[in-house]
Length: 616
Image 1: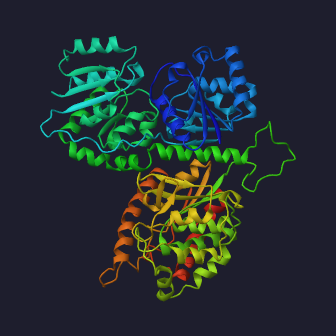
Image 2: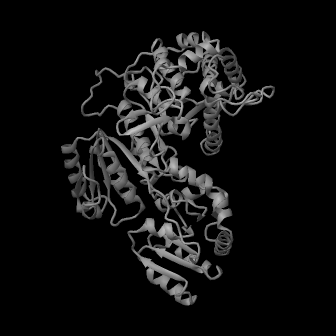
Image 3: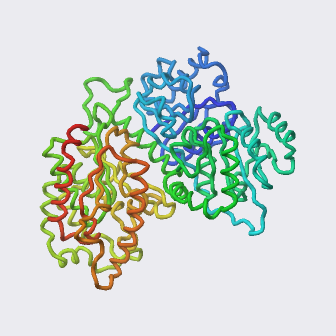
C-alpha cells in the first residue's frame, strides 16, 4: 500500500514521536512517504521517504503551500493521505484537490476546529477523550503505542526516592502546579526533563520556594528510558492532555504513575491513579501517600502495567491503523481511477461496517457460537463483519464463508471422547507443542475452503498473539486457514505458527473477546459472545475428583489468565450487547458436548431478543 503522512510541527514532542515510530514501522511492509518540516528529515528509519517542505511551518492558508502539496501528491499518487495534528489537518481539509484521495486524520489531543475533520474519510483519536469533539465523524480510537522498552533497570535498594516529570515546559503541562505541590512533599527529589518557553517562570517558582536542592530542571534529554528506570514514580500534572507517550513508556517499564484526571488520562487510567486537575493540595497528598508505600501503589497500577505490555505497543497501534487503511481501501475506491461502471469487490461494502459480531475464545465451549448464530439469524440479524479469537476465529471464518450449517453438523457428530482423541493424537510429535493440528485442520478443510480472506463474502478478522513480543496480531488478509490455525494455537498444546518473522499463538492470551478490534475496523455497534465467564450453577467449573491430566493443567492454567483478561477488557471495552451462554462449566477440550453448548448459546441469545432487535 502507498501511504503519505503529513505533519507540520515546529519541534519534537509526543505527536512527532508517534509519527516517527508509526511510519518507521509501516515502512517495513508498505511504501511510506512523509511530508514534513526540514528538522524531521533524519528522524525516520531507513525505508521511509521524507520530503522536507519548509512552507509547512508557515500559514495553513498559504496558497503556495497548498499548490506544492497538490503537486507532491499528484506525483506520489498514494492510496491513503494521513494528516497528524490540527495544522496538517487544515492543509488537507482546505485543499479541494485532496478530495480525490482517501483522507485519514489523527487527533492527538485537544483541537480548536473539530469541523475540519468532517472533510476526512476517517478520523483516528488517540484516546476516548480525544474522540469526543469528532464524535459526528467516522472515527476509531487507537491508543498510542511505543516500541518495546524491555525490562526496567533495577534501582539500588538504598537509593533516595526520586520523582520524575517529563514534557515540554509549557503552561498546559502544569509543571508550575507540580512545583507548588512539591513544597508539601517532604524531603523528596523532583526531576523535570524537557525544555520550553515556560522555563524562566518555573525557575522563579523554584527559587521562591527555596527548593533548588530538591527540584531540578534537566532540560532536553534523550535518555528517557534511563530516567524512568531510575525514578520511583512519574507524575503527569497536565491541565490538558491526550494520551502522552511518556505515560505509556512509564507503564511499560512498570514505573508507578500519578496523573491529573484530564483528557485521555481520565478515560484510560483507573481512579486510584488520578487526582483532580489544578488541585495542588490533592496532588501533594497523592504523591506523598504514593512514596510512603510504593509496593502497595504499584499493585494499584498492575492492571495498567499489563495493558501497556499487550495493548499500548507500537505493533498493536500499527496493526490497528492498518485495519483502518485496509477498510477504507476496500470501501472507497479512489475517485481518480475507479468509474461508476467498475465492478464492486465482495469485500467492498458501500459504507463502513456498522455492526460487528465478535466471537470469543474458549475451546470446546465454542460450539455455543453455533447456537448464538442460529438465534441471530432467526431474528434477521446480519452483521457487516465478524471478528474472532481462537475457537471464535474458527466459527467466525465459517460464518464469513457461509458454511455454518455444514460445520454445525460436523460438530454435532463428535459425540465421544474417542473421536476427540483421534483429532488430538498425531504420529509425529512436534518440537514446540504436543500436536501440530494437522488432524483438526484436515477436518476443518472438509467444510471450509482455504481462500484469501479478502475474497470472503463477509469481512473477517482473526486475532492471534506474537509469542516473542506478546503483542496482539490481527489477521485480515492472506490464507483463511493460516489465520484460523494461528488463532487457535493454545501454547503448549498446539505448535506455534510461523507468520513472516513472527511466531503466532492463541489470540486468547491477549484478547479473548476482541471488541477493540471490531471498533478499530469502524464498527459502531458490536454484539460480542463470551463463552468463558458464565456457568450453570448446578455444574461448577472443574469439579472432577480425579487428578488433573497434563492437558487439563495446561488448558485450565491458560483459562485462568484468559478469564482475568476478559473481565478487565469488558470493563474498558464493553460491547453494545454481550451474550454469555452458561457454558463455563464445560472443559476447554470437551468438544464432544456440542449439543449442550449449541442449546445454551441459542437460549442465551433468545433472552436478549428485544435488545438485539432494537439495537441492530
